[in-house]
Image (spheres, rainbow, N blue to C red):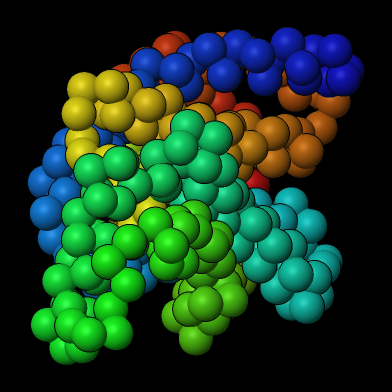
Length: 268
């Protein structure tokens, strides 16, 4: 398959993924509405569950693909490919895109009412503890908002995320399989991205905010999903294989043709 044919096939797959990705983003909004009133500690716990789960699934797919079609490679190379392929894609999907999107759309910045309420709380507390020395002008105090720093799971929760990647790689090394329910993979990724947004989101979930969050989730699901499930498998497809049509693993846009992964499965 020529580079032009591969590029054309990737574009077809991207189009085919769009309806499924729309559905996943909508489920992400529902997830955020359900958990919008929980504490930040609870949001962090949700992220600490779904992000490592996403890493495990990505590691299994990535390492399996490499293991099956580069069988002579040693475990160390499978480990390297599986680790960077899983942690890299999961970090992009669950953290970098949501964090960047929230920053660009200023969703990580508190509203004026929230800032005023926070300052009033500080004034009340300090007045009650030391009414004489308190400076009554809150604007003279340093309460400027600092946006949330990026929370990198493989660094901040290295003791969870990295073992999750190694677990997925080990499973793939001894039981290499590339067929997994795509719906489950996307849902776990969606919930990880949504829980990260809940950790950084400041404004209330109004209709306008929900539309912006929907756009972030769409990109967070679409781009990494296509890198993991389309671009990466195509790297292993030999030129004598004919590929056509969006993949059938996506239950919401089934087609009579086979996906790159299915072609590879038949070659095993």
